[in-house]
Image 1 (cartoon, helix red, strand yellow):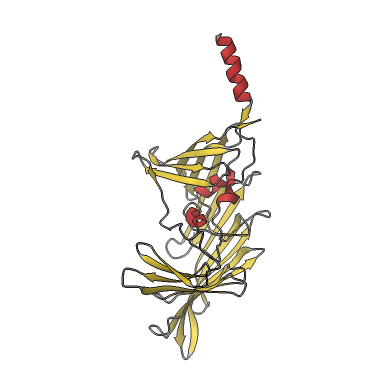
Image 2: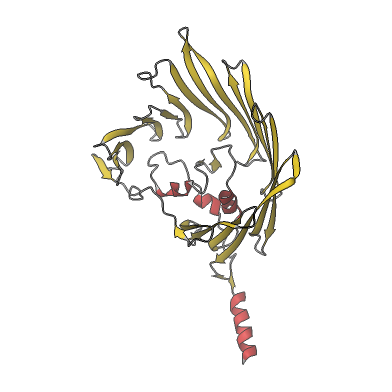
Amino acid sequence: MTFKLTIFSFTLISLFSCSQEKVDYHTVNQPKYRTDNFLDHENNNRKIYNGVLFHEGKRQSYTDISFDEQLIRSLKGNIKSVKFRKIDSDGQLAETQIYQFDKKGKIEKKFLAYQNYPLDEVKSLRDTLFVNLDQSAKDSISINSDMVEYVFYKGKLYAENSNLYTNFPHRRNTYHPNGNKATSRSLTNWEIKYYNQAGVLDSIVDPNAEKNPTENNVERFIYKNNLIEKFVSEQNKLIDNNFTTTYARVVNATYYLNTDLPLFVDENSYNDNYKTIGSKESRKYSYNNKNELSKVVHIFEGENPKYMEMETNYRYEYDKQGNWTKVTLTGFHKDTPTEKFVIQYLIEYECYYFPI
């Protein structure tokens, strides 16, 4: 009888598979530019992606990719939940996280615990009640949350007012004729964000001429193949009736093999209208044949420190499905190569099982 039950159990397991359907977890969960209503629930995953937004499937940033994003990109099979624990250099549990997915791969719930404290569900601070606004409405709609009043017209967000100070104006938005966002103006710090025709951030300007008529700040983004190729940030001051750049930061970025993964990021700061260099900084990223990060070399040259070079290596262990079970980060400064810090991620999975 026991032998028959064993055969029956094995047969049931064989008839179900964790990898029956292919799910692209990264595509499903990446926080996208929402040009009509950026309070949409899709942006609730921005913390996982370190605040980075995506446009047409490409990452709109040259910055380091968070471990959480790397993990989401790597997932294979029909994952119901993933639990990962971070172990610090002292071998102590630093944090535990759990992501729960629906059957289409969308993150439904997130849980977080620091050290050995109990897990708590992480809920978005953004409301999700704006998703189904009537875009054909002829009149404006005002919706209040605890701190902000949002004013919509035909489904688009035009104004935010603070409820803390009796409807104090906070932000105003405008839109291109094609419906994509054109500008977003802050009425508290006077910053204006300009968006191109695709609704993607083009530049940020601080035109507060009323309080600081002799100073302004400007940030500009230059794109190539829907990726940020160059970023320029300038602090300008009015001298002899002309604005002079007192400080500038210039970033140039390239990407890995037809992907949106950063390959080389070069950053320089300048003073005195670009006449003198303040500091130089670069990051070089290497990847394995699975497009997984394998090494990062970070170099800094400036006054403090004069020179610093740091290397971080990544090592992966996999299960039969090809999912990570353990990721080890080993970092060290080039001037003290024997003094290493090691961070480990231990990862467990629960799957949806589908008949085969």
